[in-house]
Length: 340
Image (cartoon, rainbow, N blue to C red):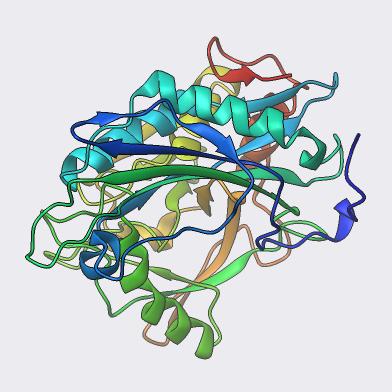
């Protein structure tokens, strides 16, 4: 029985649901984990996560498809990315099969919170892991907790996706050989000042350039860039210090295999940006946020696609990927994980 929630007016904020999954790592092994009702975490004041930010996370969504099934989108890739994050942060790997099982259990247990098809809302899933035992010297924790909770969220764009205005940031998002390519909590903590500053200056987001030369486009604080050339080629920046977005990787397959477009993952120099026809930011929350204007220290780059609507190619990409997620368009093998 669906919960009595105003699905049309949901925002992107936390709403506590009935069950969450918790597993503990102790004495060199993970326990089986289980669903629990308590949303609170009890830990020591000296827990590794509190002292040295030893934590990483993921984000994915559950949807109701056109034919009434509840599904998630490519959770195996979230599991793989969490494994990469764990290895880089000297945390024990949470096994892929356990991860997908945890996703399945949490969605099933909170099925009443999965918004109906056509509402534009989804059930957002947040898997995360952290060092929980006391650590006072700078070293990895010995004990960890993996948790996964769910919260219903509204459509990212209410009333349609209006193009946003972004600025070229003076801050660096990641070091050349740092943690930019994993989903470490600390990456997002250090981006907060930059995004608050951008908002105070009237911009929606930041464009981060490569930290070594500041000549190449990297990403924003929480999304990868996607550009469309004037001859309809889809281009995304390639770099060792950006997060490998699952949405972006999926959009590149959609562009090539569904829309017959040429795709290119390569270094993108900032100097080229003025020559692109369309620009978007891609990630789990919005799928694609269209960009209408990029401001580089007062100098405006206005994309030909304008400030009123998504560009035509971006719109086709968005409609096709969301159509696949919602069961309106046949998905490539393995993309849709059916839960109910």
